[in-house]
Image 1 (cartoon, rainbow, N blue to C red):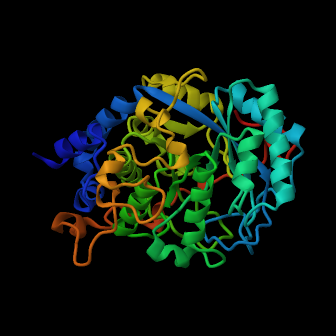
Image 2 (tube, rainbow, N blue to C red):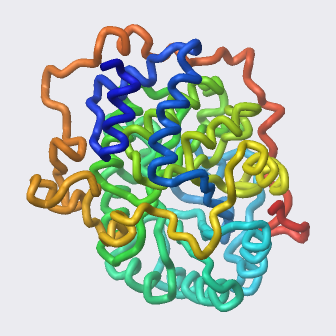
Length: 414
């Protein structure tokens, strides 16, 4: 059986591919791209039909972050000319959220720069969550506030938060190369805090930071073990004034292969096309909808996205439909199993030895650590890094700093 047929069969059974199979996806040629999209699209449609969930970002506090994450325009020492402001008031945040909901967003993501919230910050965000829920019936709210301390996830849940986002971003082996002010283990612990409080966990990655194919496989397999309900896939936006400003390592085809690999590894999870899609996928964005079932609507935290109406037109023109508030995003086996509280990957039962998937260690069926001496297939090894693009082809004209919406007097893009 050929690679794609094997991956489709495994995806329909929620079975984890091998590392060699995942690496082989990243090593496929451009000539094979449409076949790859068709195969991963079968898995996407099995679990999510033709629905696309819309999410809307509200940046509650922008810039002046004490952390040194190399990819971030809000980092310590950033010279990027982004908006900088302190906490929005609950009514201001609620108005910003309402614009996204009016545009079709089912989930509002509340984000604040910083290492992590104080208890006072959690109280402030709790009031904001309550204000948004009061004004927008049925809307989901996800908080993204950095590293959580004991008890903070429970407070957010009590205030009405549905989910918590904290990305792993890259592999554990290379994490220290992009951030020194906190660790990979800190991030894993925060996701587990959220799951332990009963929040739906949202955790993903950033591609295009100079990582290898093996690094991408490592972080996606780690996410499978951690078992979030949603996996955002970001593509680095190389902001001028940040250490990674010259890292233009992606082509549209490379981005598509990454998305297909994530879908095969996480077949029944909400895979979200996140920051950088306009910059790196460009005219191939509609094709990516065959791989993902969720996108952000409009603008991002510090950069502008394409017009909200253009997003809606793209979804309709590609033959997909916006997911309504009355529809449950996740497949029934995940939605009813309490996956947000760390109930396991859904690919097998506790009798198979998973023990919940989020309690540490993982297991082989959930994508446990590869044993010493394992190596990628020859074809994958030969093609590693083949999707890079020269700096001369960088589309810096597509990187626009956000000057509207939250923290400004201008109408948001939604």
